[in-house]
Length: 334
Image (tube, rainbow, N blue to C red; front, side, top):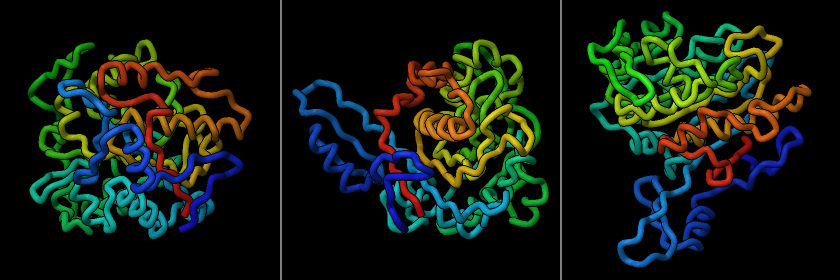
């Protein structure tokens, strides 16, 4: 692996290792590494609140992973393994997964059918995720692939997700709705969205893949740039307590005319974004989406200030962090 501070002529943040993160946290106050999660706060008097840790997002690039519009399975596997180990602070992939999953979890891996025919990386990502989970001794029949190619369940031995919707209607503040029955059955969710523009919301990433991909009536929640609906739905207990990890497939990103666009609007980005905070991962995704748009001479999503309303609404309600300066970005080029 080589680490660099430049990619496609773009300045990258310096790679953030565990040692550097601990040193930075210590300079602010007390720092503790616990099970792959960092907790730290400024020096404080007894009874004062502890500041939450900055969310970590791992950005892994590998140009060789995408060649002539096709993703290379083995190289994508290397990218995912690197990201998982960095985020979890583990040396082995199996250990990394165990930071978020237990032996008896039934896992819902949520992909995105919209735009899949143009982006063309879903099958590789499905196979990569199932294989990677196997390194943690998680059997295929503990995994449900949602919005994945239909033939993969039979080939990989994964469990068929149940059809239909929850009997219960959930109140998420700005609305009420049912969720997919597969979400009800699952005990853990791994979110595997694309990185795309969206004609109404601005962009699609972690949050929208869950909110509008798991709710029964997504058309109700498109007003005002889908804000505050996206954050409210993801913040609902039915999703939030089960969401373990977000893996953004930005191997090939849809940089314009999304969420469903022709091949001419798909650009290789050679990138996976991984983190536990869906708002933080989307915030980093927006940064890279706008870099790709700039290369094409397109204006930034969200205007000059790159303001996507639903990201900031989600931050305001405590779903995650939308402040790029408050995110610990671990950027690596393989």
